[in-house]
Image 1 (cartoon, one colour):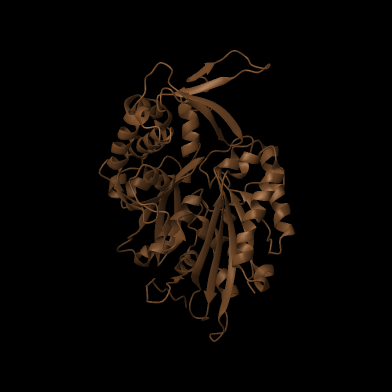
Image 2 (cartoon, helix red, strand yellow):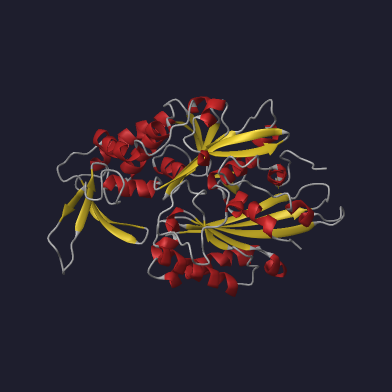
Length: 482
C-alpha cells in the first residue's frame, strides 16, 4: 500500500514529505502514441524501505549546468518508517558564474568550477556518507549550442573531476539534456557518437515537467490531484539559453491544439490521466534573446548582420559592433556570453526607448512561440529564474520574498526603464532590453493577458525553484541506496 501525506508546518523546522515519490512511482505511461518522456520511479520505493524502527539519512548532489552559471543542489533526505515515504529535510544551494560553456576553449577551468562547488558537498555531506552519495550533472541549453567536440571536452573534464572526488559516480552521471528535454531543437553540433550523448529519454524527462512536479510538490498543490479538482500551478522558467512553460490545462482543446506530440506529457495517477502541456524553447532564453535582438545570432531575428556596424579592420581582423534601440544611445561596451565576446552599442541614429525596442524584440519573438489555447483560463503560474531576477533588478519585488505581479507590471516598468535609460547611468544598460523581452515573451509569445497574475519566486519552502529536485529523484531509480 502506498501512503500519501500532504505537507504541513509545525513549530519545529519544517520538512517536506517526498510526496513526489508517490507521484512518480504511480506514474505509468499510456500507450505510446505520444512522443514524450515519462517518469517511472516505481522501483525506487523498495530500495528505500527500511525497518520501521530504523531511521536513515541519505544525500544526493545535483549539478545544474546552465548557460549563464553552474549550480549545485545538495539534498538531505530522511527515511524513518518503512510504511511512510522519506522526507526532504534540507537543501544546500550554491551557484557560480559564468557557465561551463564560457570555458569552451579552456576545459580545465570548467573542471575547476566543479571542484569549487564540490567543496559545498564535502561540507554538507558527512564523510561517512561520501561513498554512497551520488553525483549527477545535467547540462542544458548552454552546452547544447556548442560544437560537438567542444561540448564533449567540457563534459569529459567534469567526468574526470567527478571520478577524482570521494563521492559515488553512477552511470550516466554527466550528460546533456536531450532534444525532448529542450524542445525539438536538435542542432547538428550535438554529440552523437561520443560517450556523452544527450541522455536517454527515460533518464531525462523534460525539464519543464520536472520543474512542474517539483513546484507542485513543494507547494502541496498536488495533494489536490484528483479527477474532480486537478488543482495545480503552472510553471514558467526563463534561463539564459532556453525558456519553458508547463501546466495542466483545464480545457481539452488546449491539448488537442498543441502543434505536435512533443508539447504533451501524459501520466496516469489516482486512476485518472493527467495531460500536461509542456515545451522548452531552445534559443529563446534571455541571453539568446539579447543576441537575436542585437542581430548577433545567426538564423534568429532579422539575421546576423541586421543591427551591426562594420568598422575598419584592426590588426588584420574585422571588428563588428551590434547595436539596438534597447540600449542607451551613447552606450558602447563588450558583452560576453557562451564563450564569445561581442561589441555592442546603442543605436547610433539616436532611436531608442520602449517603442523602438519592442518592435525589435517582436521580430525575434513573433512566430517562435506557440500560444496555448485559452491560456488565460489555465493554472495560476509560478515564474522563476530570470523572470525573478529581472523583477528584482527592476525594483518590482523583494529579492528574498519575491512577490505577485501582473504581466502589465513588467510592461509598465519596461517603459519606465527604456524611456529614462539615457538619464539614469546607475541602471544596467541591458535592463531595458531584458524587461522588454520578458514583456514581449509573455504577451506576444505565450499569449498571456496583461491582467494575468504571476507568482515570482526563487525558493518554494526554502528549496530552490527549479527542475533539479525532480531530476534528482528521477535519477534514483538507477541507484540502490544502502
